[in-house]
Length: 202
Image 1 (cartoon, rainbow, N blue to C red):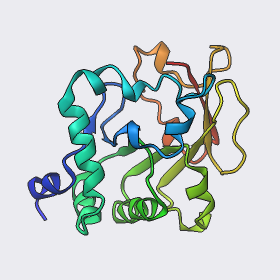
Image 2 (image 1 turned 90 degrees about the vertical axis):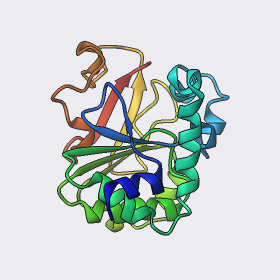
Image 3 (image 1 turned 90 degrees about the horizontal axis):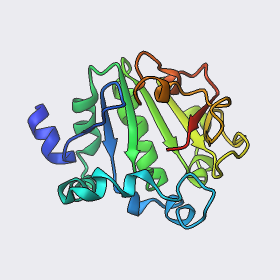
Image 4 (image 1 turned 45 degrees about the vertical axis):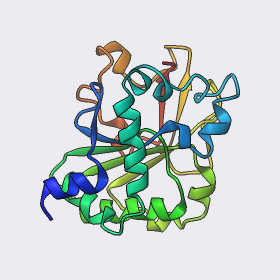
């Protein structure tokens, strides 16, 4: 499969100024758990960054996200994503949006297994989907980080790797705010050796 054909199937990847490379974006409006949390003050999903700014300022961005969501039904999705991701040093799943189902998660596993030279990072609020799989299924080159459901909350202990949002800069471990909002050379989120990452509140 050629890259041009793969892009037509999955409707392309996304590029954010902070990330070191390409990412993959789905509509935050369709998050299973996030759609509930965004109604609750004190959660990281309340005032979701992926539902404002450029995500809503430019209608074509939202339309593209919904086309990507629909493409998950295409039997060629795994092959197409594999073609597009092959050769990347790192790849982030869902700079907007989240896992839609266990089947979706396992499709991501296939892409990761097909791209052993790429380090993948998947942040998620979808505890139920993680609990439905055997941790042994997770590819060695994929780090799934279970996100804390409360700002300044404790580290989630239901999964091997996690992340949280804090308001105290002294507790923050993500260096992006000190680097012009960019990851720079940091790859902690993709590292299996880093069990927990603390981000500053957006």
